[in-house]
Length: 362
Image (cartoon, rainbow, N blue to C red; front, side):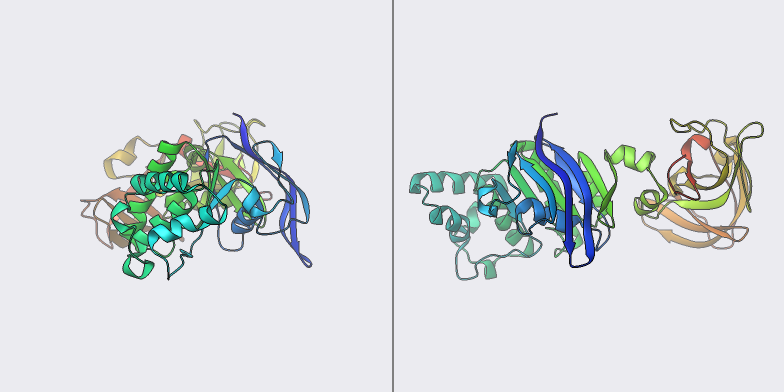
């Protein structure tokens, strides 16, 4: 894939604090990349470096093959959408869309054509004569996206654009942003701490922690084969269940922990092959079977239901196995209640093993 953006050995420090550390990243032309992580991981800082809003300490940034490391933001060929709408309150929607183009000296006819196209794509044509105060939050964010869209650039940067909206508006606009990408085919980098946004929008997700990218892959691969224990616990709601124990390779591979011995036949070890020793075993709530379905699982145990959370489409249950509390996901019509005893189990190929020392996937 032809790279649209290339980042090479990027460092950024604020005094003695290293925010980004020797970061390398290639983003393909037309790709939708999501930077995902908790607050303070460096995702917005990285986006601001690409935008030119922050001066890097070391390294280089290339956009469409051109070194833009020290170029002004206006000359980088990007459009940016912020968490705050940042609209001019005294201007109409049309005024907000045309302001930057007029300042750039663009011909009036071309400005009108770009505004008409953006308004049609974002379905804000009836709003062009209104001022921001007369718009809802979702409409204001559409206008903010439109202001980036009229620049007709190859790269769009989104910095948590949906954080200020309620749940329904977030869902609606998330779908519109995905459709916008499919329509335009532009390269997009999207920053969020919301894993649902990341999983539904991204071609690839870069999960960040402490200024580093821990895993860069498709949403499906990150969900099913997390590179380390942090990624495994960060992705998924509820998060992955973990058991601490030891992998024994004396015969057939077995994971031993306080809850019992788990048969690992069928587990797909990494390229380095089977590794014994202290480890964590992780299993997602939806991969744990219960009742009759658990009878066919090589790993089985008895669990006591402690808490039930009916969500309509499915039901979450907090169960206790020995001293360990686990989340399991059940059918939405499940009739289990606190105090019930369940047989639960899973297949080894659904599990994930992580080395206790490095926390990397085994």
